[in-house]
Amino acid sequence: MHSMHDFMVQVVTIAGLLLAGLTAGIVVNKARREMGEAIDRRRRALLGPAVFEYLGAATAKPLPGYLPGVLSLRDRRLVEEILLEAARGATGGIRERLTAAFVGQGSVRTAIAALRSRRRWKRADAAESLGLMRSREAVEPLVALMNDSEPEVRIRAARALGLIRGTTSIRPLVRALADPSRWSAIRVAEILISVGTEAADEVLAAFEGLPRLGRISALDVLGRIRSLRAVGLMTRCLDDEDADIRARAAHGLGLIGTRRVAGDLIKALADPEWPVRAMAAKGLGRIGDPAAIPHLREAMKDRQWWVRANSGEALRDLGAAGRDALVDMLQSDDPFARHMAVSQLEEGRLIEQYVSDLTSAEPEKRAAAIRFIERVTAGASLDDTSRKAAESTQERVLRALGDVLKRPGPGPGPRAAGAR
Image (cartoon, rainbow, N blue to C red; front, side):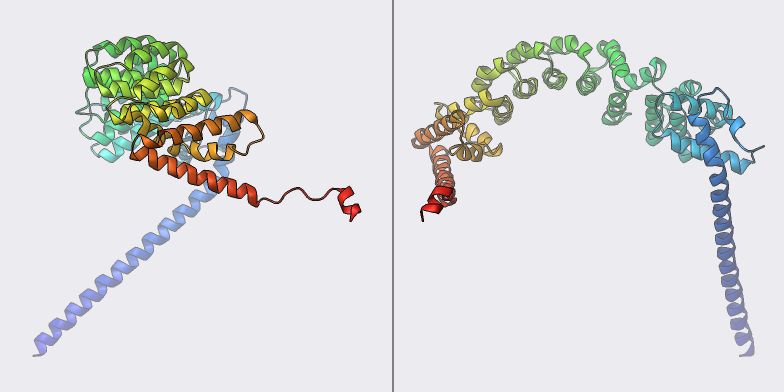
């Protein structure tokens, strides 16, 4: 009995000692961490102004000339953190001075060495830091890292190369478009788009050598960069045997927005594949060439909903002439065109605009509003959709007129007041 009691006492004692030790360890670690953070704050308060004085200086004096004395390992780490924070939004000459500072204090060399770490998070962090450092020394190691076994590490390396820019750093990103099974094409495309015109030139040079999916992604990149140098390639792609490539080319031409391709997109409205026709209609709306209006009116009779919708939206975006075309379509012999015209007029809140223009002081606006009411009313007998649109419009007209009648008239003039 006593032995069991002694055993339990020993167990409780050992558990208490372990708990006390664990508590003491937590307290000590917290105290050390807080002490370290306090020291970091004091040192950053001393080092930060010196770093920013270097970044804003007009002289060629290197960073060590602005720092107080010989730096400890802690100070070097803090200086690197301050520089990395400043690099996130730096431009122009400040960016060049930051790169010189990173190279000068050995940060670039240390980060390149970390790319070989066994720990994936260290490789990823090192790649991200090298992108902010923007040193050309890091290009080859980052290109090699794009073959890393970890997807996140590869993407960080790609993003870093996009920040460094230059032909040698962008070309591997373009090649990555050719391997969508290993890369997220969307993420690589976003990196290339952020690079801008430099990336457009490399994409154009590599385009013919890319596989089908790579060419589709490349057309997206070129369109979103809005490079006029890509117009020739995209117009040629409108005749490609692949419908997806034709559709992406039409979409890209719309994003670039030059009117000189209006004829090519009008021709694409007759493509045998509906996605191409839909993208051509959307592109014509973005370009804003009034010459496309009659062709978009015809496209509103298309049996594919997306083609009709994009054509109607394009007309809506083409100003007064496009809106007039939509109103005219309310009397079309084609029911698909009539229904889409009603839908676009409602979606663009144009019906409310026409109704409010009935009481406008401008004769042209009143005439356009009356013509709209006449078109809707005349089409009411054609089908249920047109009839419902006419009834809805008539109700809104009555409400608008009722609001006008409720408005107070002009008050009595001075003479009338005096006559009383």
